[in-house]
Every structure is written in C-alpha cells, then in structure tokens.
Length: 295
Length: 322
Image 1: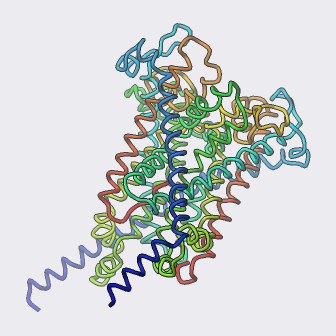
Image 2: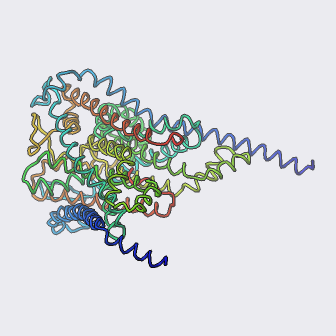
Image 3: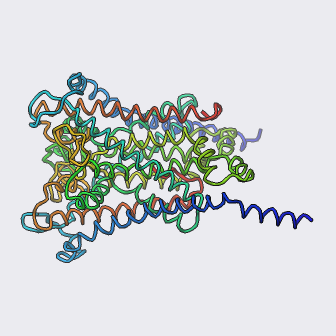
C-alpha cells in the first residue's frame, strides 16, 4: 500500500468516526423529540384520569347540571344527548353529500370538478371559528334564534371535507380493472357505483366517517354561537342545545369554582374516551380491511 | 365486416334504455354539487357583506393597522389580534417544527420496523384530542407549570430584553404558543412521515451499502428529496396554528392590546371572536368581529394556498386534510 492510500484510509476512518458520532447525535435528538411530544399525552392522560374520574358516577350521566355553575352536584346528561343529536344529524348530512361530491369530481371531471375540489379545499382549511361565523349568519340570523340545527349544520361543514377526501382516496384506490370490468359488462354507472364501489370501499368509508365524527364531536368553536348551549335537558333541536365541548369550555372559564372545575374535568375525560375510541376503531377497521402483507 | 358489426354494436348500445338512467345519475351528481358549492359561496359573500359598515367607517388599512380595540367607544382596530395570531403561531412553529420533523425521521429511518406503527399511532392520537381538552389542561396544569420558568427568564434575560420581560401573570402569548405547538406537532409529524416514507428505497439502500450511516441516508436522500413535501407539511401546520381557537382562548389571557412581552396576556384573531361574539352588543361590535373573521380567513386561505402551491411542485402528494 502506498503512503497516500494509507493516509486516505486513515482520513476515511476519522471521517467515518465523526459521521458515526453525528448519526448517534441524530438518533438521540430524535428520541428526545419523541419524548417531548409524548410527555403531554401522558400528562393529559394522568391529569384526566387522576382528576376526572372522581366526578364520573351514574348520576353524572343521568342528571343535568345545576343552573349555577359554582353549585356542586348534577351531571352532564343534556350535554351528552345534545352532542349525540347534533353530531348524528351532522353526519347524516355530511356523509351522503361528501360521497356524492367525491364521486362527482371523479365521474364528471373538468372545470366543474375542479371548482368542487377548490371549495372542499377551502372548507378543509377554514378555521373552525370562521365556520361558526358563517353558520351564524346563514342559520341563526335567518331563523332568528340559536338552535341545535344550526350547531348540526356547523358540524356538518366540519365533517364534509374529511369525508370527501376519504371517499376521493378510496375512489382513486378502487381497482381500475374492477371498474373497467363493470363497464365492459355494460353495467350502468350508477349501478356500478352502488353495487361495486360502495361495497368494495365500505370499510374505508366507515373509517372516514368515524374519523370525521371523532373530529366533529370535540369541536367547540363552531358551536359557541350556533348551538349556544344551555343548562337544561331538551330533545328539541329547534332550541339552543348543550354539547360536551361547550360544557367543558364554560365550566373551565369558571374553574375558580371547584365544582365547575371538577365538572369540566369529568366531562373532558368522557369526551376524550369517546373521541379516542372512535378514532382507534376507525384505524382498526382500516387496518383489518387491508391485505395482510400491507399491514 | 368488422367495422359494420362494430358500428351496429355501438348503435344498439346507444339505444340501450338504461343509458338514460346514467344521464339522470350524472344530473343528480351535478345537482348535489351545485347544491353544496352555491350555498357555501353564498354563505361567505352574505356573511362578509355584513362587514361593509366597518370598512366604510375605518377603511381597510385603518381597520387592519388600528392599534386600539374599544367597543364602548366604537373604535375597532385589528392589529393587536393580528399581532397575537402571528406571535403565538411563531412560538408554536419554533417549538413544533424541529420536534415534528425529528419524530418523522425517527419513525421512518431510526426505529426498528416493528415499533414504527405503534409510535406513529401514539403520535397521531395527540392530533385526535379535542382542542377544548388541551385548553383545559393548559389552563389548569401547563400555565402554572410554565410560570417558574417564565419568572426565571423574565428576571434574568428579561431585564435586558423587553420582549422577554415580566410581569408573568401566567396566561400569555407564550403559554398559548406552547399549547398550540403541542397540538400541531402530530400534524406536521404525520405529513412529514408520509413524505419521508415515500423517498426511494433503492437510494437509501445504496447509501447504506456504501457504508453510509442512517445520518448519511437522511442527509443525502431523505431530506433533499423530501424537502418541498416537508415544507408543505410545515405550512399546513402553520395554517392550523393560525386558526386554532378554543385552546388559545383559554390560555392567552384575553387582553385586547399589544403586549410588549411574550409573557403578557393578549388575544388572537380567532380567540377574540370566540370570546366576544356572544356578548357583542355595542355599535358595530358584531360587524367588527366578523371583519376580524374575514382577516383570519384571508390569512389562512393565503397560507393554505401556499401549501397547495408547494405540494403541486412535489410529485408524491401529501394528504389533503391534515
């Protein structure tokens, strides 16, 4: 070996040492970053479970909150029912409309489709408080009062882009050969949509719906001046309706009172369990539907 | 005659009665699209037409650069809130971007393959927690926790730099920035992860085969190829930070003025709307709040548009909804 080659290999070894050191530093930083992100998750879990559990009892779900937030006792029945009603109606609106919009932009194409895509992109990027303002002037001002219907419309606007994007993705992934096969067999487009696309994409659609619902169910900002919230139980969506996020928000703002703080934490625990449950269920369905080798 | 029979075939196909049904199908699709697009556009125009008196009275530059927000004197200026939105977003991005990109790299290039999806799902769960729960936790746990740190900074560096000076009441731009950073880390991490995972496997393996470390792979393949995709992810995270409402409202202290220090209480565009809209009964107050909503919408449409532009340059494609 010549002298210069020896020198070169020496240099290579030293640079390799420094590269290895950099590699290790990178790995340490990356692990530290993960810790930074996961600590809040653990902290929130400990906080909610440690502080929230003691407020949760049977009475918590079967009675309504006291008119005065600072008073102890009462439950969150009206908020649970209100959340279910508004999210349910929002989903009933957003799912068919969202799937239709996705199919529209695939089937029709052209400038109309890009207009639809643009509107969906704008909706997806809309701050949720702005959705609240829009629905306020569209529904609340028009009807003259706050209502559960207005809240449901606002939540539907939140859900819509999530569902369109999920359905669009599914349409893109649906096997071209199946699609062309149905055409070659002379199947009508609407038949192929109903009896081929919907069944093959069903698990994906359910996942999209669950993720959209888990997003909408925790939204507060669009409800503040649409559903408004109240302290009593109602099944009439033409009146102001309470929701769990609203109840947490209002009680948290009065968290100087121990009763309000406990009520907020108990409700937050229930809400997080519902949201994470829906989210994980959606992921589990999506995972199960995928072929084994792609899991 | 092939052509003849083909022509006849096509002819029969055209006359199939069912094809009319497809025309109806398309018509129905079109109908739903119109029924959605038109109200959405109308809703926007209708809402913002209510703000006309505000623009007439203060002018666009006058409103946007107005420093004073005093509903009882019918004086409305948006600058304190624009400042608050930009400052909290900047704090949030400073914390979230390095953490999120490192997490994405950890998941795609450093962790053993078996652990990847578990870590990815755990980080994603952070994105699923409702804003109001972050706000509650921020208010009751994080704000008191950050206070000694704020006091330490304010009593040392803060003596020289007014931007970091006390007093430190707790709720502040800084607290809001920290809460928002926690909320956008999973969003930027998830989008960056997709980008990194899409970089060519062959090139990664080639670098490793040449004796390169994981750092070399990241430096020479993953980052250069993923650059614009990560940029798009960061911009989408920024859009989210700008629009974040409830959690911010709960920890920013709600003061309608420009706080000189990051430890001062303030307001963002979104949080002042959430906080004041229901009680807005002064002259022009609701209209001025809707005008703030328009300012917020313009900023977030610009930021989202930037993300779309970047993404179009990037061939791989990042998820459309964060």
